[in-house]
Amino acid sequence: MKAFQTFVGRQGKNYLTKAEYNARLKVFSDNLSLIRAHDPTKTKFRLALNKFADLTPEEFSSMQGLKVVTNNITDDNHTYEEEDLTNATGRTLVAYPKSVDWRQKGVMNPVRYQGTCGGCYAFSTVNAMEAIYKIKKGSLPSFSE
Image (cartoon, rainbow, N blue to C red):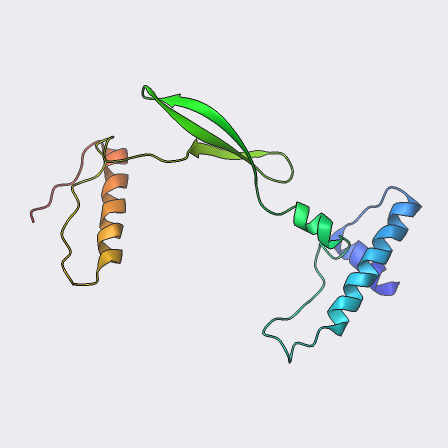
């Protein structure tokens, strides 16, 4: 009971009814028992109390991930399928087309031959930087091969 009262105070929890308080106390107690039963010497992770300690596994899981709603948008005379990404609170995060071919928009230089050097990470980084440059400055930087 003392651990739950400490948790409620630290986390600024506020339960509207005595029934909700008791239900959260039960969930908290179950989670605390799970934490105390966990043996970190047998695993590579450690369990501890956090702001979610009064949630059931189902409640916690429902807060994870994104809800996806498909819409259509038009941009530069192209129609794209858009995903409306909404978090668990229902707030829209950001919506973008599923894909964009930046070559068609003139934002990418031609692909460079990298041979057998194993530097694909460097080539992809250069392409990304060139694309940002084009979007911000309006022209592609030119390099000689």
